[in-house]
Image 1 (tube, one colour):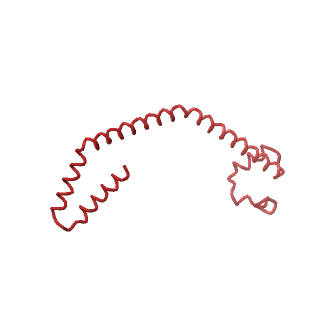
Image 2: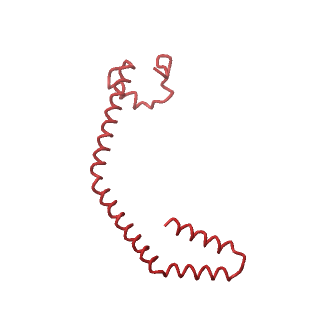
Image 3: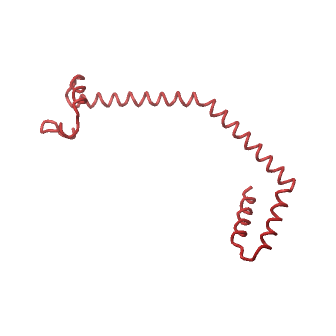
Length: 125
């Protein structure tokens, strides 16, 4: 198949780049038609089309069968990430010394940003 694609590209390049006139173009066209009309080429093209259809169908079936597994794994990974983030937030809360959820909730809804950083609250802990 790669050889056929290469030869087709070579033929197109020859036609586009040819300055010899109409004769070489017509000769090339005649040869291309002979190849395209060859029963063996047609049989192989049909075979390739059928194989591609089967592979596509098999791939679609595999994806459909594996989708619930992948969704479950993604859900588990998301839950793990959420738990990790929650643990990191609790750790940060403890390091800041607040320890009170109400204080953190009030701070997070008060607008935040650099305006809240002062002498008693450094940027980094």
